[in-house]
Amino acid sequence: MKTLFAFSISFVITYITLPVLRALAFKLNILDIPTARKIHKVATPLLGGIAVYLGLIIGVAFNFDKLFIFLPLLLGATLILLLGLVNDIKELSAQARFISQLLIALGMVAMGVRISFLPEGAVWDIMEIVITVIWIVGVTNAYNYLDGLDGLAAGSAVVNLLCFGVVLYKTDQYTLGLLAVILMAACLGFLPYNFRKEKIFLGEAGSTLLGFILAGIALLGNWADNNIVRISIPILILGVPIFDMIFTSVMRIKEGKVKTLLEWLRYGGKDHFHHYLVDMGFHHLGAVIFIYFVTFSLGLSAIMVSNDLAIEAFLTLSQAAIIFGIIAALIVAGKRQRRSAA
Image 1 (cartoon, rainbow, N blue to C red):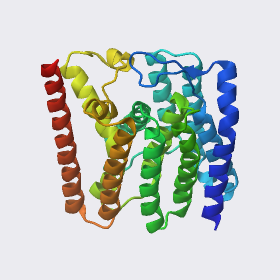
Image 2 (cartoon, one colour; image 1 turned 30 degrees about the vertical axis):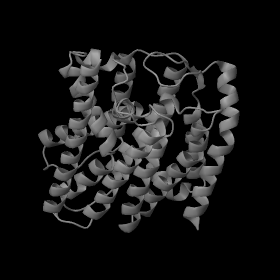
Image 3 (cartoon, rainbow, N blue to C red; image 1 turned 90 degrees about the vertical axis):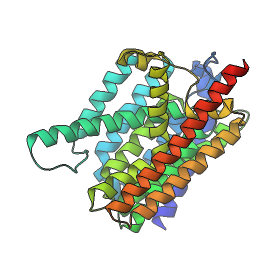
């Protein structure tokens, strides 16, 4: 009943604050203006992420006696939200955003949120810190890149959080599972406004907020005793944004679009997983649903892996890699065919 109440509060708060924030975004001119690299055709309000955050925080407040242990994650998420909001209002440089995200990730590590799977020792500790920072910053930005079609980022987050929640409740990690449920409810409260004609976007504030908290849940969860199984579950659940970031980066480097980290940070284009699906003939909603199904399929694999041994986890990761390899090959082949036709 407490979980249901928390879910309801978070959903309602997000849903009822969105019209107010939409009107405020128009009044303050906090809008996503269409450009050549964007799909939408009209200026669209960007404050949807604030509503998701309010739903999350108020849901947490009603369960603060249980969820106060996640204050470091919520503090980091607040800073990420504010950073994204500043960028939505007045675009920051890629370097400034990246450095700020690095500092926030290091702050998370300093507060005890980190990966722990390597042997003891100073060198291994440093490696764990580096991997943790890469994971937090990587997933945070991967979710921002995923936010390119209506309903894609928030809907994918619902699927991710559902799968995380199933594993967490199954392994008696109720407090972290409750946090996942609260955020899932906030995302569900946002989705109707992302699909309707009078829509509102998450903005970078919202998309990076979702990526950051998902990265944090992956770090805080005790997914298994075996290290391979422990690592495989978050990778499988977050497989789509991870694939999108890796595949897009490889293609940009291969095609000579970026040559340095600075160029990669600055580059923006319609060359992500969802863009390629649209180019291959998918309707926008069809591309979103396709990615939902891929995400849910990987999530089901993660749930099953939670009961398995290291060899099963390794084979499941290998299977996921093969599936993404097939998808990448089809995308590249379709791209070559369109170039030949042109």
